Image 1 (cartoon, helix red, strand yellow):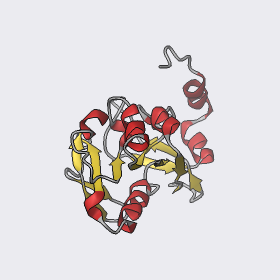
Image 2: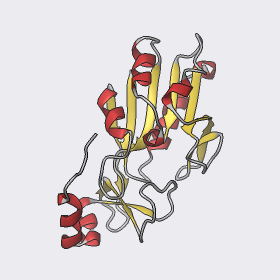
Image 3: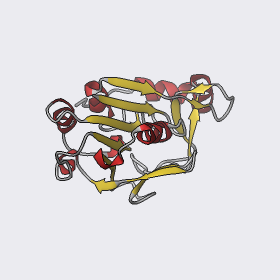
Image 4: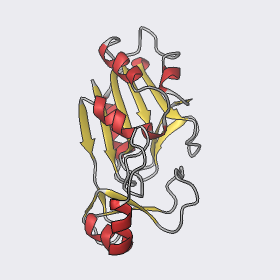
Length: 192
């Protein structure tokens, strides 16, 4: 089984994953991973909004996870999965062939409202997807979008500083109709 917790920034994706981790009695059968590119909390999966954490192993690719899997492993957790590299087929292999439950947490969309790196592939192989909503920073409604305050100088900016969750209505207000039209209707050069 592969279950993915997804949604915007500050929605509690990591907290939901950690809550699942805590329900498993024998922690000796669990492996937890996080991409090395996320240097915020090295060696742990941490929910900043809820101040809880679990120990994790830093990796760069899905393939590296295979180096840690042994016959004891029954459950795997991966946080910030959108930042991972490699083939999601590794996750399918672990779930189907090795009979390991895989729990994943990650942002589904960028602050530009585009699918976030690996997430389309991760969501495609997931048996269960739980979209967790945040509270809109501006109005308090259910927020499903992430917005970046200011100008981003890089396409992917790791961290949560400057990002806020917004509902659709407040996202449209902040972007303005002209900017939103350009953003949503721009021509895609390559969709791979």
